[in-house]
Length: 118
Length: 112
Image (cartoon, rainbow over all chains, first blue to last red):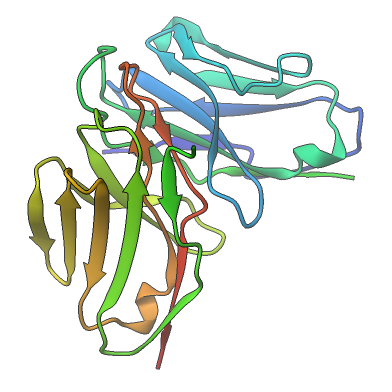
């Protein structure tokens, strides 16, 4: 079974530029997460989709970050314009969970995209 | 109050010893608990999941859940240098939507 795919793996941009990350979850996984992990910290949830609907984006800086999940499968996360403090690893994860209630399900993480903003 | 409290370490143990990692949580409604391992520069990967009070064993790893005392722990027996990593225990939020909250994790160093 193929895992979660992410691209690119590394990205270096200058501040005020824009950048986009792509994620392809495990086939059949209804829930998709985007996390930001700053060095030395745990993953911070940015946005969570269930199928193609957003169920949590409370920690997404909406003035500069946006995300979409087309047809409930692939997802893109965009930053425009980037700031120095956006330098981090952006992790995409997916889980089978296809309903709002019930116990949380195992999350499977992609390799991440390491973003450096200069 | 933080939803999850975890000792950030680092926790150093000699090779062959038992490493004990702990998480306490505040949401009594949490139903499922996980331990992830994250090597430096890598993504988190699931080690154990536990849903019921008591112990769950998988090889050298034992997860312990005590819902009354609101803690979940991970024991690593016969620790190996390859166990050196950061261990994360995300805790689910009540209200559904499968959301979990990660703390900073506990960094474990196994000294040869």
